[in-house]
Image (tube, rainbow over the protein chains, first blue to last red):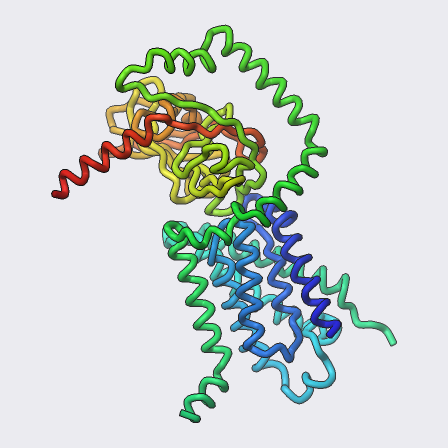
Length: 171
Length: 279
């Protein structure tokens, strides 16, 4: 039950950070972080698909409401949820994940796994987001550089937040 | 039937993905003429009010800057007053309103949400349809053109900024009156625009003022920027030139929404004409 509350709080906090803080940040008009996807990354392993996809969709729509881009972030976040399902089904064994680790955090899964997980999901999300936003081949160089630099920024923020909040507790 | 159900539950992730992705893309593609989607933007009461509150907080940090700006604007307005350029002309036009003359009024509003670092940028204003703002009105600041109102709610209005990949404004070179089209430059620099499709006979010089012309929905002669870079003439029919924008979009606070009182008359007249042509 407590994990439900934790996730609701996390949802609200991440949307607020994205809408009021990160929206104003852009390094050389190229690199803009989208930390809000951390919510989807950190959902528990056992989240049923029937819940995961609506949550991703609602998260995307809430961000869209603040960015005035209806559907854009929702589409990218739903894709992110799909990639998450695929990635987890490939890398995590069902039996072990059920009882020992509830959430995919940096502390429970280790740095290497979490880094690959965050990087791959962020790349998919950002690539889809930036290309859907521009929707033109004419600016492809520019879009790609925005995509790469922004992904770098987002992954950096995700790892920093991981080290801040989800360090392995020393026994 | 049972096999179908088993198949669907086994690949539920894929089917759910298709459903939600389809729905998102549907909203995304239809947004421009999708009035029902207006609950997913900053003109709704929740997001609009949140931005209003955060903006109020920010104001305390920027009081000095805004004061300076207002003082400067006051001085500028006083200058205009002497030469009766700002308020007097609109007043005098009300009296001698001849057949063709358009009449513009200015409504002051505050920008409560703004972005410059996306390919599609929008502003949110703290006034809406209750104050008479309608879709399609022009928005300017004291420096120049800001954008076009695309959606309104009772208390808020959303403006498509000049920094948007789809914004086009009919413009001309102030000196030679050579017309062209104006849009945001390709490389997303919030300080640069592009004046394109100017007739090849024009002889622009660096620093020439670029203003709105009579075909735009703005009053004639509102500055857009200054020519900052010229591409050498080629054999083509048209010239393109880079323009340094007059408005600094990263610190907009007060703007003016322009009401064209004759716009409705013009639109009904033009739509009538189109109908006649169709028949």
